[in-house]
Length: 419
Image 1 (cartoon, rainbow, N blue to C red):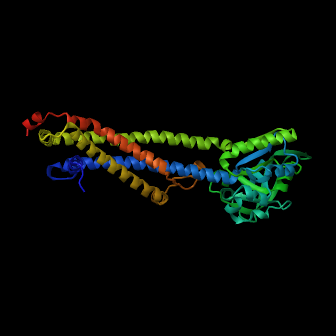
Image 2: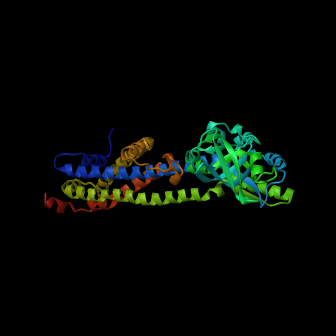
């Protein structure tokens, strides 16, 4: 197929031949520079996307889409409220809970925990606790049995396993002849779950609803209701509407929360970091792209004779401009495609790369108690890859303008004088 001669000349200038090998080497360096910059930006954003996705999935698997809690006191007739909430078309499931703070003690080991009293069957409808229970069974939590299901990190910290005793100590005390004695109760470990998020694996335990009600003296009343809605992104609107309905019908105040408000700081910080990293790494792409300027200026200087001959044959300035603009665009396009291919490969194998580095260096690069997750997830989004590719190509084209205009303005006679 025939192609414009400007493209043919531009492609020829990119190939290595004789004394132009150094210029071709510089062109290759510019391609690699753009490719590495593009790959770094794509990989970093894919890691941030994966972290955000995993954090969202693991948080929502444990906290439910929305909650409605009693204001300064437990809910009254939570069964009637649950039935009323289920009449709403946007709500799929509702589960009661009793929640409070305690100190978990096993031997000489201890740790602060959030105690959540649940009905095992109803809780499975609003969370994934059943799916992530690695040992034992959540159904073992029956009223009066004083069984407990704890996170794997907490089990390791306390040094307990199935069948062992864990004592929950509350920040309340009662008066005895011996003085003030803290309220406490021994529970038998009936299950161990692993959410994959340190905050829950280390700081959340489940007990039976009736046992928690007796432990926290709620008189059988629920602290609140956990809602599972059809569209989790409508959770705030659904929770607010349900809370207003209860307030109007029962003439009481309720505390309404949803996952977007409870964990707003997590997701907001991720979005802020993504924005900052995108700007910083875009500057790296800009630096790599503007290496094309120096490359093309060297080519223009080296090809002054060729430019003069073309101009003397009647080649218009715009064709000379197109030759060198095409050459720079080829470099930018090749570098961008190289970067995308490298980013796809690294993102695909990133977990293995991190594991290899941890094994070679003998250190844990991702500490779950710091980063919430123990692995490094990735999630490539085509829209972001397209944006980065467009940015790299745009900067590469922009970098070609000055050298190309410089070449198109060279006087043919002046150039031939020194040939």
